[in-house]
Image 1 (cartoon, rainbow, N blue to C red):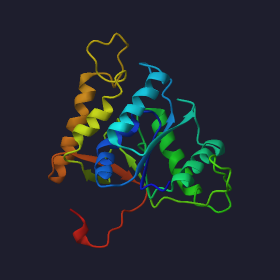
Image 2 (image 1 turned 90 degrees about the vertical axis):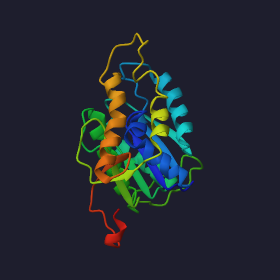
Image 3 (image 1 turned 120 degrees about the vertical axis):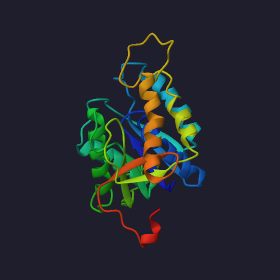
Image 4 (image 1 turned 180 degrees about the vertical axis):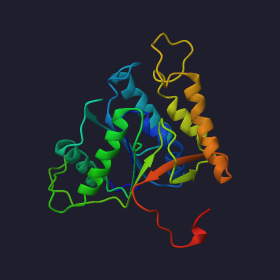
Length: 240
């Protein structure tokens, strides 16, 4: 299956939090979007890997993604090595995305920065003709494929974005997908331990960060991204 955008997160809910509204907008514009989670989030304080499996599938359906795959790498302990790179290369070559969205370059959780570099390196290596991989579907040799762009969504840290996407009209869909992770976010009745993301303040911050970024570009809501190389345009009139 050839898709337009492949969104990758270290944990289930990273994609929804970081770029959920952008994905919802692109899907509404008839773009094909797939999601890959690197881990099952099994080290999370609240919930379990099993509850995250169920919640992530609900969130996928809310966003309207074509598919969601979990690589089942070790939460907290996966590394950027040949094994993990090859496994991701197989996915990149299978789905042939033009754009890959992945974790923040630098963030509070160690998996976010690791996941960011792992995905970025795998996207580059996936284009090399001397790296051989086989499809897990039919055991055929895969053709090289390098995405045109790799963009990093913003997470816990308030990094300065290199560009922002107007997501006005899609924040409700994003929030619905985020809150599908019922075990992870604010619930006044929950008896589970509190975490940095389980407070009402954190849930509120998702909306007010989007409003702040939107305000800076003259729209209602926006999501920010960082790039690894210069963003090229054909004309000055392409910039809104």
